[in-house]
Every structure is written in structure tokens, then in C-alpha cells.
Length: 233
Image (cartoon, rainbow, N blue to C red; front, side):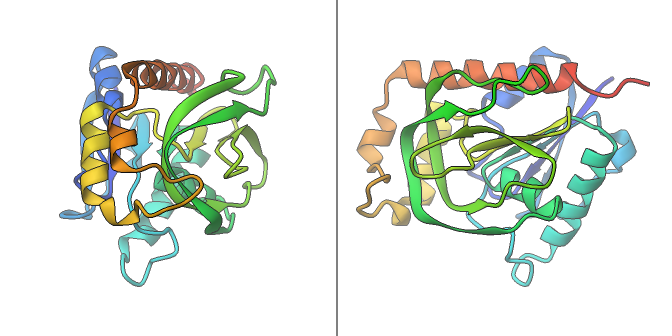
């Protein structure tokens, strides 16, 4: 059976609609919960690697020593051409594992805001010209060497990128459900201060249902794309 492994950093940032897609495709799903267990899988037993978000920084290796081993695993997965998807912190981890600098963005971006497509090359995933997606991030990154920028926003120029055929990093949360958005708002409410690109909890949680549907459909497309581009024996 094909196997997908999820790297989850905090209890309130799970795979959301990604799990639904994996279940529908018949994947055996395993998870490393770093907040209670640092055990990493055998890379040879993974067919798809999913890296979730979290409030910590990729640079916090003193406070979270497992970050170094996690980056090593990500680097090996990308090199082995295993499909790799990183969400928010996960995207920053892919960038860091590829040698790029991760640092504080000039402003935080929290809530439902649009991103627009940058790349339209046939060799990469193509985002819609514009779409409204869910954000919760305060850091950004330099574009890794050999990476292709896929999407950008007014608040953060590097929103999505692709390395080779098999790795995509997303600063935003296409996996978000109404339940997961509520969990993030509840656990990270202290970040909802006044800001040009920071919505308050009521605006986040009262977003139109269509926002979730469109984001989740786009998430399915990203996952399907990565799985279709996997290296075959």
C-alpha cells in the first residue's frame, strides 16, 4: 500500500482536507507529532511527505532540537524525488533545507487575503490568476536555488514555490477547514493585533463557505499534481 507521512508540529495545525484526499486515494497515513514524539520514519518507507505549519521558526533549533533532523529528512525526501508538500512552516522548512534564508517578513499576514499566480510554465504547477486563501504567517524566506516562484501577494512576495517536479512549498493554508481555522484562532489569538494584513477572529471565522471550498479544491489539485509527478521505478 502507498504510504503518506505527516510531520505535525502542534496539535492545532493538522492536515485538514489533506487527510480526506489521502484517504480517498487509498494511502496508509502515519504521523510524527513533534509536540509529543520526535520519532522520524524510514525515508525508504515513504511515498508522500506532508509538512504542516506551526508557530515556531525554522531557526529555533536550540528550543526545538528536532528541527535539524526534520530538515535532514526533508532534504533527503526532495533528493529522492519523493512528493513533498510543505504548508506555512512546512514551506519554510523546505526552503531552509534547501539552503535558503528564513527571516521575519516586514509584516504579518493573518486571515483571508488574495494571492496571485506568478509562473505559468508548463513544467510547474499553475495557480489561478488570483484566489483568496487563508494565511497565518510572520516569516518569509529567500527563494531556494533552482526553485520556481509560483505565487505572490501584496504583503509577502514569496507565497509559493516549486523545486523540481516533486516539491512544493505554500506559505498559505489551502488545507483549512472551518474547524481548523477556529482552532488556530483560539490557540494563536494573541497574534490578532491591529495590522494592515491582520484580520480579527470574527472576520476569519465568518469567512464565506466558498472560500473554504475553493481553497480545498485547489489543495486537491496540488496534491494530485505532486503525486502524478512522482519518480517511478
